[in-house]
Amino acid sequence: MTIAVRYYSRLGNTKTIAQAIAKGANTSAIFIMDEPELPEHVDLLFLGGAPYADIMSKHLREYAENIKPEMVSKVALFTTSNWSRRTVHALRKILKNKGIEVEEKYFYAHMLRIKARTPAAEEFGKQHLETEK
Image 1 (tube, rainbow, N blue to C red):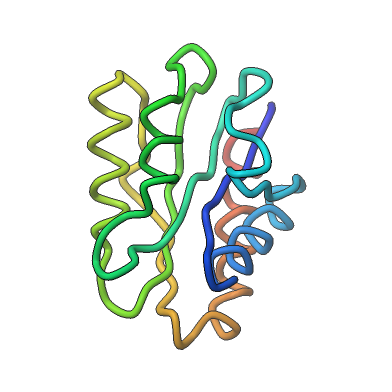
Image 2 (cartoon, helix red, strand yellow):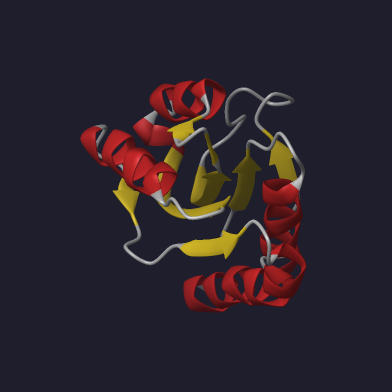
């Protein structure tokens, strides 16, 4: 089973959570600006970012819009912010409209509790690794 973690982060909060998820899933977290598209098919893609001024990053939106459905079997979403989960809802809509399966369950970490939520993020990745085996 192949698993990938991709994220967009400006302040480092989402990067921290992405790295914890990746650790749990026994893979690496990659910043979407460093790898603008998946190089190979993945069975599970963890994808996340945060809203900035309550709007999803244009880079994350473009990344999601450019995912080819044949390159991913399923997506699990995650987000960090102070209160809004709009990024998750917007990503889910973009991906589902492309015919990509998106898990209903997602991971959320409040921006003021990143360090405290890191173990839970790692467990989120680990649970998926164990479930998909």
